[in-house]
Image (tube, rainbow, N blue to C red; front, side):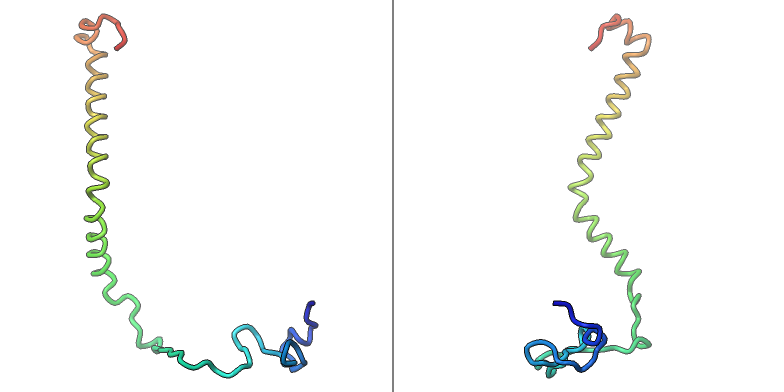
Length: 106
């Protein structure tokens, strides 16, 4: 069942179990809840970038140093493998390599 335009516009028409319109989203008409503590800070008292550069440097270092043993060994192995493959290719395509293997594919 769809509410009428009066009910959606915030009128005081009967609605629901208690025959009372409860208000817009977030403005329900009941009593305030107990035990909820909220804190606020004025916008002119806030410093959102306080310590951001310092934290960025040291947090980045901490996180990168924790991951270096997972990242560095595969990159080092890949570098040495590519270096070996490049040197082997250059040797096989050189005069000495062609003379040694005589046009055979290895």
